[in-house]
Amino acid sequence: MHTLINRFAQLALALVLVGFAAGSTRAAELPDFKTIVRENTPAVVKILVEFAPGNDSYHSEIPEIPEYLRRFFEGQGGPPPQLPRQGMGSGFIISKDGYIVTNNHVVAGADQVIVRLTDRTEYEAEIVGLDERSDLALLKVEADDLPVLKLSGPEELEVGEWVLAIGSPFGLDYSVTAGIVSAKGRSLPTENGENYVPFIQTDVAINPGNSGGPLFNLDGEVVGVNSQIFTRSGGSIGLSFAIPVSVVTNVVEQLRDTGMVTRGWLGVTIQDVDKVLAESLGLERPRGALIVQLQPGGPADEGGLESGDVITRFAGKDILTSSELPHAVGLVRPGTEVKVELVRNGRNETLRLAVGALEAGERASVARATPEADTGSRLGLVVEEVTEQLQSRWGITGGVLVTEVISGSPADEAGVRSGDVITLMAGSPVTSVDSFLRVVEDLEPGKSVPVRLIRRGSPLFLGLKPE
Image (cartoon, rainbow, N blue to C red):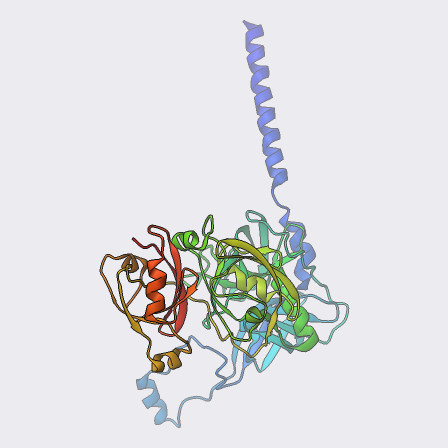
């Protein structure tokens, strides 16, 4: 009996020891944030900015003086004089001689920029260059032998990886927060519809004041610059976005060399490929960026791309959705010749073209399209010739104008609308009603075909399946 009890005791002790060892192993696997913070905090800075009274670059959230107070001040010699307004953010040092990275929105329009180090030393900073498209800014202070941060390689970050942020949220200097990478390549188009930054999404707690601060990996290398949060309350809800180091390196190098940024540019309108379009274009699944329109004389036009081509790989990068193409193009230095892999009329083709330049002050003249509708005859459409006035207004030649879409028809189901102008169907140009009817007559029943049309001046493709 005693022997049995002893055996149970030994077994229990062994289980306890195994559990303790497992717990110790799990603890040992947890990130060592202390070392990262201790070694890198000295190179993280607080950015203090000042805007002169009346400077429209400063967007105050303070409401205007109420009417009853305004009437009071009118009897007391007017309202009190306006004082300079202040803002703040974060940043980090990238060179011993004083180059500092932060966000464009932190310092744009500022009349004075002060950089404060962890030891409370302050420097007045010069704005070397600003890039609104990437939301990056480069500053310079007159100092020597400053602590610096190391940038990571461009393709080393993985989803699920631990990351760490250091910054000054709500003015709380050098706060540290940690989390994981939730996703990569997030598209967050600007107000102008531009989309040149494949953002890193994390669940790191980021708040106002963190903007411009570094995002670290566990090797203590900077993998991104904290830029945006998604919030309904003004505080962090676990959706934070950082500019990846690939963009940071490209932009900072250009700002330091020239004070401005130029980007790769193709001169195309693109849209996503859905299931119906994929079938009509000869793709085994929805993927790539479908070219809807080319700017005449643009790099894509000169390089041999055509409307209806689907770009599936650009400069060595796979293009799964249309939003990924601007990311890839924008990182290519203008003038560089790149390889473009595409699907044209169901066949895989490869072209080489020279990427053009989108200068810092220019806007892309052709924006990304959004698919909506389509057209037909045997397809459930009534069409007529396009007037010269409409052709001139929309810059097109030929085509047919949709005047009626039969309810429940293939065209109706595809989304064609009255007022659309069809210019291409199943790879054949549509120049008149006669040419349109000939193309429709030859369509194979039940097989989806791509249709290019102009809607309110904007081109787009739709997939249409004739009965």
